[in-house]
Image (cartoon, rainbow, N blue to C red; front, top):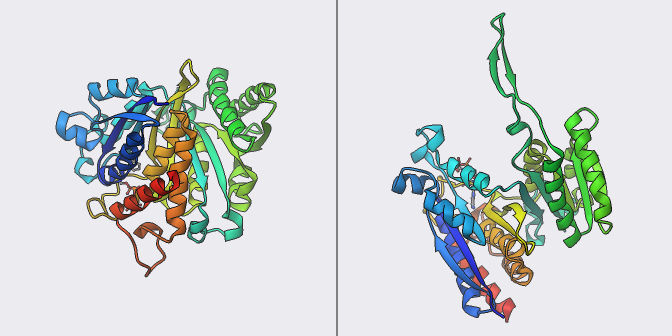
Length: 369
Ligand code: NAD
């Protein structure tokens, strides 16, 4: 059975294009096998789009993202564009994509590959076998709430104000994403807020609790965010899926990510509402930035981009088998000892971005057998 999927690739700046080239090779190989066919378009975002069009995301590119089944982004930014005005900075391209695609659920897995257990700063027994997923609300909360600003009071002193606001609808839609994911994974969902000191947390807990009966196969628990931060470094394997707000998610997902070692290994996804068939349009991207310090030198680790592509196959295209194929290929390559510089023990030999891409492609081909 063949199905034709439209993919938009936005390599961006710095190491983005190098990493994306390795994804493209795997996507082209899958396409050639015929079980799933891709119509792949590449376009510009970030600094590359500023150089070509004077804007970090052209309207035509935005239109393509709105019609594609899924979009994969490399990275944006770099010193060349540091001094241009805020509204035209490379990062604005990324923010526009997230906003216009209405992506409200950010998924950040923290998966510890056996071969990289030693790369974590935590003891091997704490992180070995770790597989957790943090679902962060992305478009609400204190980063967007009104009123906000810095005001000068009559006595001349100043006051900075931000407001944490969540509606029940905003909480419900991201919680449903998390329940659905928990159902497909380990069947456990931990909802995280600070209902002990914040009204928005009280509402958060009420709304998530009320959804529980819709997902009887998911074991729901609640935890305060400060305790969750402690538990993530004390005993992270107790978690399966965590759902939390924008601010707590920002911090907890970074903490969880570091349990597994390197920035070059971390994928992410941002999802919006499902289509009538239940598939969610999404934007997929490695967590790392454009790494200008190593760009163009063949040193970048392409695995975060390849793992982001695996998430894309799973969550937007419903291609679980192909997603696992890519993930197992990465696991196999790591187990064989091949390392880019960022994940290598000091003094050991390393492979280039292209060699790592070669190894993953070969492993995909061998596993597909
Ligand atoms: P960065 O993630 O680009 O790099 C941080 C460090 O990690 C660097 O030493 C880099 O060499 C290393 N690193 C990152 N990814 C790697 C990979 N795949 N393989 C090997 N090493 C890797 O963060 P930064 O240096 O703070 O930012 C650089 C630029 O990227 C800035 O312009 C920033 O605004 C932008 N940025 C973009 C995104 C995004 O596109 N989503 C995210 C973060 C930063």
